[in-house]
Length: 388
Image (cartoon, rainbow, N blue to C red; front, side, top):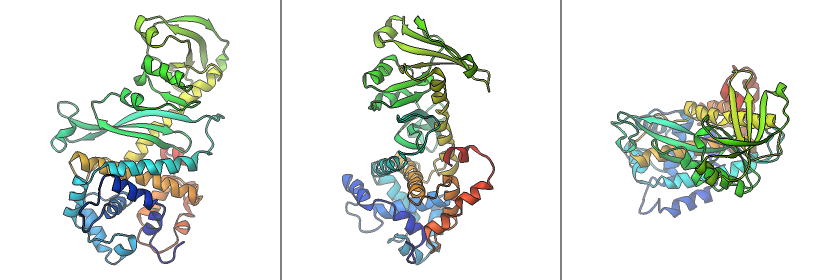
């Protein structure tokens, strides 16, 4: 596998180049370009993500210092700060958004057989969003509040492998429900949501699509209890009721029966109330499914800590979206490499090893074989709990 290639080149060998060219051709990304193609741009930005570069000048200095190694890394053009800045500003960000979705589809197939915390054959998705804060003076196009700018990442996370199946990027003012209204629901799948996604009409559509949801209820919902089911209170479940909504508009949007489960969390001593349209799983399993939603919170924390999506190389909307989508592509690419090479280490450790070995001409698999041994000596952290 090595054959004198740098680790960076070996990593990029896992990129489906034909699919990348299709994404570029779809938006005429290389139209009238004589040098510094979209592929060169992607490689430079991938290098920046993997080595945690701070700025365009930093990227330029590091790559130029590599000299003749650039050719062996696949970068055929001379790297200049202004050239990279212009590419990020004018080349359509949708090239890299579409390519990220291609990598996501590959990764999901690789992780589809992974075990899940709950013995459940269905696919389980967690829905959530995170805000990326920006400086108003630098990003006026993303105005969020009077003195703040922000963009929001809406994500549907497949909890088998923690691979994002859907990622949407909007201005900070866009409500979380925007994501729910963009989805096509898969029959038999579970969608786990916080109460910010409570929309009776859309929840009813999930049921009509033969899919299931688990969502935390708001305190002010008005309902009629039809009957109660027996519960095992030692599991934390306090009640399991079959209900219908009694409010006029709520009943109009959701005329069917649903399940209301009250649960007491032993760790926090908080009372949580869940709504679901699944009538077969136990109440304790429903509560455990909702607990797994925390994986998406850890995913957001992980990418903010270990990918360059808080400090940006450009201030235009196109440059920002280009950087974020390439960052997501690198995250998914590392997950693909982890599975195909059967490394089974944490993505955090793999990224750390790659960051200091990209120019080395050694086998990629050899460089990553000690990942598991290194993980054993690492401190306990949310990142390792999520990606081991």
